[in-house]
Length: 332
Image 1 (cartoon, rainbow, N blue to C red):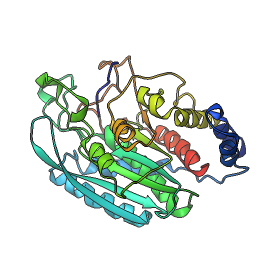
Image 2: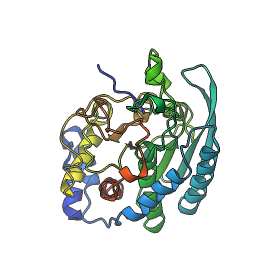
Image 3: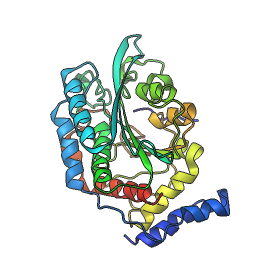
């Protein structure tokens, strides 16, 4: 990721979620979404943190490196323990410098025969350049990507573990995109474009694991682990998936997490969800930490720096994001 583009009261919770955006839906649809009671498992932040730490232990997961290969092997093994099917979608994509690079999207599916599906996403690769580091000597160093990558994956891994223990009533597909973060480095003053980012998402959107694949909606997690994170309503999410933005943020408010899922509008972000929306046609929401007051002007302060390390990860933030998403999934 990315660049900015400038153009537990469960019964009550279910009612709040179903009420969100009702003006856009028919009475039949509204009634079908209302649940009297749903048992939602407890998101284990310690487990999610351990999943984040394990990824960071491999080192920067830059495609084509031993750390990337080792992390892939571990991710596939863990998802095979939790999910019904796991597919490694291998592909090649050309990066901004004209080089064809190999990538691997990792896809874990639950209840694959259930036609009612939800898509959950994150990217698992690390950026090869710390090009926003304050020290120019670090610009060509890869980043550990504890928050920008590993945090979203860690949350989804803990969700997968919960899906194995407590089956939701919908099918779920978790897609971990590769080659997301190999966009042009800032120090080259390269003429940027959206197609240089999210290469794994672009490939998957054109070639999903199932021909004609569809889901009710998708949720992308990106930089969801820092302390006191704020997640505004990202622009493209509102544009393509406004109903689901409202549903997710209403869920967070019902859980008492509106200090994280803030009721403010965020900038348009060139992230994986953009291509899932534009190409695959699945309304998708990006849950991403945005901070216009940071030194980079858009993202979390340590975005694309050598300081995106494990000590920046906060278990409470992982808990908040994971619990909100579990409530969204189990209330479908």
